Image 1 (cartoon, rainbow, N blue to C red):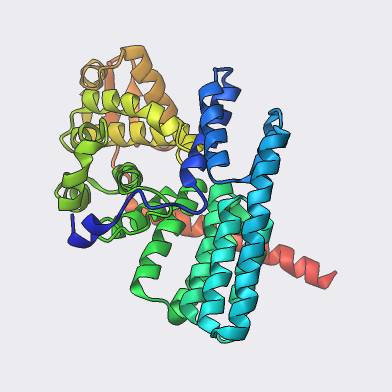
Image 2: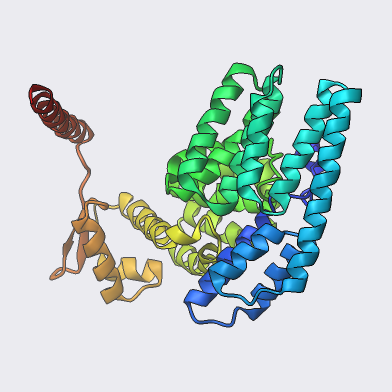
Length: 393
């Protein structure tokens, strides 16, 4: 790991508190499953009270039907109002007795405090006031836009997040520095994971492995979990070796991630039974993660397709019983899964159940590309024809 990476304090305070966002996701998951969520509820309320999040406390009580403690709410609200009055007084004084930079710093303090207590609309407005202020540098505008994106990430407001990331990228291209561009890649990768664009998310995550500083979003170990899970799914085996298996940053961290080393090396070393076993061990971790959880079924399916396709790539034909043994599966289960993936066009093979054989077929890439062009061309022509009819009307 680089010296810069070692210098990063992963316990740095996140604003808003992304750990709280994760706990809320786990609480909702446990509630839906009918499990006892009282421990998580207590942890959430403890975090809310610790940061005096009066607006967010009211929101949570309304959303989840929790009893609202009026005394607790009053105490937190009083602290919020005092902090707001103090900051406004400092801003007013700075406008008279200090310069623009001091005023801007106090405006940032106000916006971050509103973010910290969960007053999202007021926080957005406070950051907008910074962005629209005359003579504000590109760096401050980018920071304010990325701070707004963190609020959207906290609540996973996907339309808002998409809009803010696009704006931050535009500002970065106009006048951003390396660090802001690098951190913005992580923001975008989280957005892409949330909308299930795993391939693009993997590209961005991998580009930040050696230079990760985005602790306001997640810890380095959590970041590496996302980077490894997406890389295994999307990288060809030869690239997986060069970019991940032999990567010094990956080697230094992967032992800290339960079962990830086994998952990575088993698929690379073609130990398929071990790969499936480690995948099932990692499954509970994926289910409870707020970015991965909604897509766990998809991720597991893609991993299984990857393993089957990689196994079959080495053979023209193979005995079903032999393949089932290699994967540690029963013959009926393997037959069911292969049949489903072959029918969906995800695996190029045929099953001879009488002969207990799976025969692979090498797709004609040029012909497939030609058919894809024809398909897209037909779709484009249909859209043009519809547009022409609308214009004529």
